[in-house]
Image 1: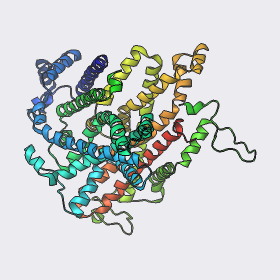
Image 2: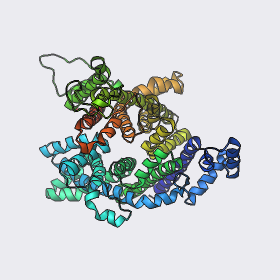
Image 3: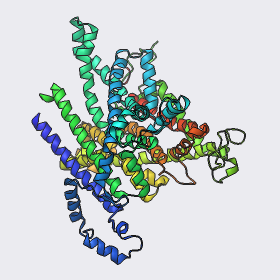
Image 4: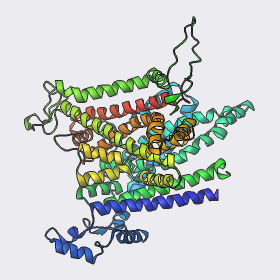
Length: 315
Length: 306
């Protein structure tokens, strides 16, 4: 097991280095130097060249990459000249709000999808299963902004129960307390995930139900309730760990669109605003952070699966 | 996939031929097709897709909605005579815009899928066939691209270089080849051990010929399934980019852009600017997902009903 985990860790580090190279090259290609932003539009080429030379943007690409990498390892994500602030401090102001929205979305998605998928597998081809499958199909084909618009129309405009704008407070405690404003964004994010999670859970549970150990459990006279709770649920839930890891890129994209739709001051909205300002240091730093989050999330998911599944642990 | 060259062809054992009427021996693809048309959702999916292709590409031949001349007197007209689905803020005809948006969405969807599957199958087959260090390097690069949130990069490039049908297709395709690469590599890893590959090698085939003539044709099953999902994902990606306001520009239009225009009037009750285009996006993507699922079920021999 240790050998597997070490190999897995090594792969992740190599992928992280690959990501940093990719992001650096992209940044270098579309935003080679902030000289224009610093010196203003009236700076001539000689001044730009002098500035580049002074601040190290005229060095060979390899050297620039190494100093970029050195900065990253010391927590320096770059500087936003549009906001006149370091990118790290910009992220720090907003990360808690985004983490709350995405985290709640993910947790609710799991809490709903896990029992739903299992129930669908146990009662498969019943009316309830067919309805849930059809709903999952529709939600699965729906971009999150479309679902968000439908939810806004129904729960904020037709029946004004909830707010169509997310909480604008900068304090996380107030945001958490303002559930009327946060319920729709969280649901938008959660329901899209529920669609793919429950479909997967359903087919994973059907596979487990066909296993010999389920037949053995039934043959030795175990009540069906215990067959399901002791033998089936635990085995069918395992792939969910991997699935959550794999869904992280979608979670980030959903976060971007949901924050834009509900005007929620998180990282996604910062990314959107930076698109309009062409603030590439922020845009690429967020892409980098997102990619690192995906890699680390998948690594954690694999480790968790190893812990949870004796077949892998003891192999 | 094995369906392409099942030998000997699987026989339908459940249906005993009646009265000495022996069924013709069918190829794997014919069997797959029969399985496909038996699937009701697949037929619905194909029907919807055909509808949207006809609607988008042939609709404008018969229906000439004004989508080019701003006409502020007719702005925000509800559906009625002359404008079956009403008009938008510029007085453009919504039905005409839906057709134009459908053209662009489908063109980008299919072209991006083509780019993705081309890159993906090349990377996957080279990695799988050559193996060793080449395989490791290519797969780590694939991992890198799998980890980078695809939508972010598409948005950044759309902002920097502008969005057109061609640029969006290329960018979306260039960042969604990872899954086909992995799938094709997985297929190639099993196919390359088969006797006919050994035979081809003995006959002097080089790697390139092996990939072209033997590996890719046999991996066609997984590729076909994947293409359908790729098209759906690309159409969704265009909708996301358009909805955030960085999509195609006049005179082109995309569904995401139309929807975001309409969403601005949600509280004004201009429903015709929102729900028709939302329905178009969802139904098109759903049609492709139905087709993809059905193709997977019918091409995967293990899942095929016997």
